[in-house]
Length: 111
Length: 114
Image (cartoon, rainbow over all chains, first blue to last red; front, side, top):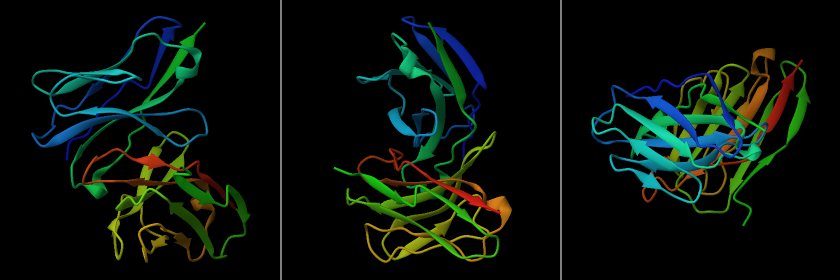
């Protein structure tokens, strides 16, 4: 199953867009890309997911490259409350045992 | 809607003691999961269940057992706790047929084994 690689940390100025990259070069055709975030000491929170098309919801946008080997989570106007660890996960629909979280990216939104 | 409820929220336990962490969901999700989170290691999957009556092993199952007698409950048991099991434990659930990979997490149970 595909693994993901994310930078360990990033900074973003408040009000600016935060672009969080994720590499998943071994992704299979039936694997989805999911993003979660975890605010300090809380349980992780689902943000968005996609298969091959770009997706947008009220929280964020997900851009998946045409070859599906990487993706970017975009927080369009970062606020201090977006400071969190962001996890990128690749999973097949029935991969109950493969919903594996890596170390993620620690995003700091700076005033 | 409560979502996922975990208990206890924190516990200090002597090594060698038995401990059960409770997890209940009210969303009628078919799949449930237990993760542990340790500093610098992210979330690691301990056990999972894709439906009532079935369970499976995750990345770090040793020293833990689970059961899934019904849809709503998924308790995690440490038969004989050891200090290396000191961690924050998160339970999660998902409707894996309708929304694969979209997990809902509880607020965690912080366990300290002395």
